[in-house]
Length: 294
DNA sequence: GTCCAGGAGAGGC
DNA sequence: GCCTCTCATGGA
Image 1 (cartoon, chains in turn purple, cyan, brown):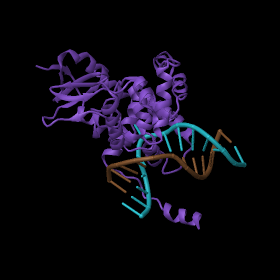
Image 2: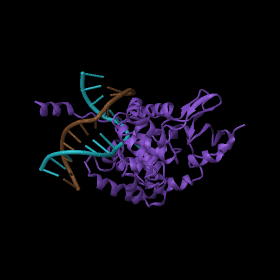
Image 3: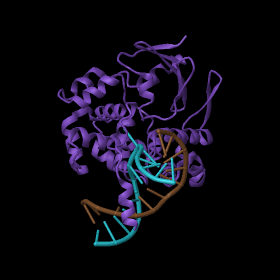
Image 4: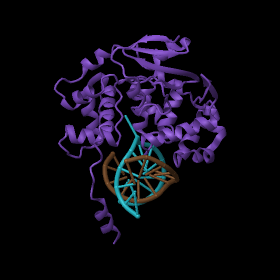
């Protein structure tokens, strides 16, 4: 018998496929398996309940999916007259921001640089398979995300073999820094948002976007608002009438407009755009390129 | 074959 | 400080 967790207004499948976490896999019976930290779990949504195997992992799962939060308060905090955001929330209200292990979150987002979600997942799974601790659930083999020590031992060359490309440099350097004890990632927890952002940006391969992802998905700073190519496009098209806006201006706008749960608003907008296939507008780059080359 | 991707770093100005 | 170029790799 599984443990059950009350999960009103929660969507497991969409949350696991919203570009935050990159390793859960769907089973034929509609359940999902994956590791939370080093713990293998099986999860299945049944209406407003989340079923958890093994039962001892109930608390871990509730924390991971933020099922202890007042999600209604998050939704109520959003600006009422924002039609774009309302549409995105309506598309998938049960989306949750996860509370991911810090190192796993940092490392997977270092690999995310200039990559599509499908490929981040591919790299992430290969890194787990080759360097992670093997574990199993119901006879199925899973791999925990490797520790910084394991990354440091693996080294840049082997990480490149996992498809990480140039990102292997940042992964290796950051892992070495943490494995040596020179820096403790957990120290970010005691810092305020701005300090934690700066702290995270000290690592090679981590700029503001990735640091904000770690603030949001790892440290639970719900005001953090990662701006990637998708979000920048959405902001420009939906909030600035297509006008090109400097990054700093976008940042002050989102902080003021979306409020204390801006990170959630960001995730709703991102997920909606990505899932409804509002593809990139074709730009006539080719002709411009030719001109400069001729 | 071409464009694009949950960007970041280095170098030039 | 801002602008531009480069960095691997695979999906669409």
